Image (cartoon, rainbow, N blue to C red; front, side, top):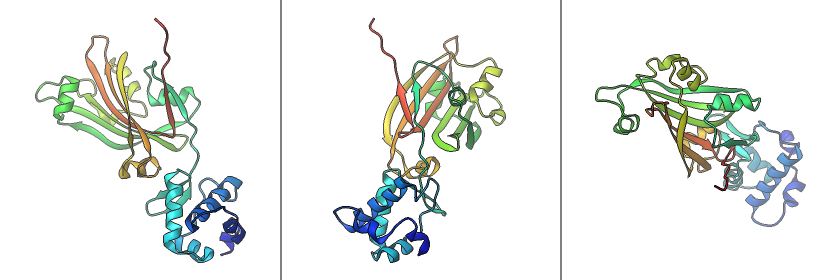
Length: 251
């Protein structure tokens, strides 16, 4: 219990304000994080240890921890435990510029990488056939990636591209647009549709956020100079990490 006493004392619980025990514990833990006694990446002790130390039930502990996870202050990692969340620097993304995630992060001086979730050639879905203008019997390259900047997962990208333009998706490196540019088929314009939704359980695990957290979905349809569609991408961004900005003029 010595480790617990280093960041959570009986006085913390008594002075944590009014309300039920779970609220007091929640406020005490949040106070330990704000003061630096619990730092980003630190593991929270097991619920049974917290319950025994604070002389409260594990149900009460779980309720307090659940609320801090919902607020993004703590994060649960399947099979590992509960940790103090790492603050994410918010990205302000202009909607008037057609760039890739890799280019966006490089322009900000941030290091980006991708973790591949799916990559290969597939039989297109009816939706992909219609959106990409594929002929019967055509193939589609699908690339699904977790996009990470400075080791923080920010987005899940799911791109569909005609095999005519990307016959070897396995050769795509960190930047899809660099691969398309190398083949002379980089898009020059795009139409984007943005909507809000809650992040589902499986997505939350990848993005290191609580299930039900706010997310932004973006559907991007990109075009070649000829007007032909080259890319259909549906992405899910962390709502706490992105602001999309559009400049408006009178005219």
